[in-house]
Length: 188
Image: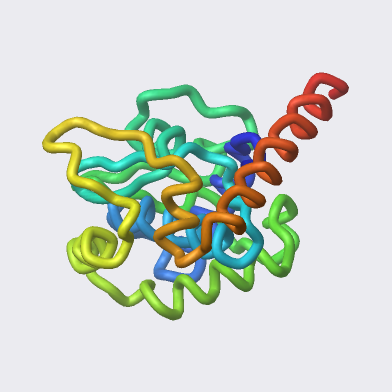
């Protein structure tokens, strides 16, 4: 996995909001973000956000992103709070106005294509329909009975139909990528 990038994740959330009426239930947004990362795992073997995956009672989520959306962790200058505003009734909205493609400079065209595909498939679902979908169709999720469980990437790879040789190769690739990202971050 890549290292977690709050800026990339916030831009993903902002992109979804910019395409779907500028405001939505945060539970729907967190599911769209999870499904986008899952789609990236299927396509490239690594996530877009670099976040950790967890099973929670309402389905699988991105751990650090969930903390940001709930206000349980602090946002960086160009991160979550720059792009996303909390609203009442468990909704969030896009803080920035008149966004265009150039505003999403942390995201490649290929990543935006995944986001568009996720929106096409899931964007019109109601919030609890998308929760039910993740319960029924994300085999990596297991009911934590009120708690939360980490979901290992290899569990997701298996749920996506990868064989054990592919799973092992992808896990090795992700471990190597994490080491490279760590070195790069130390050089900044």
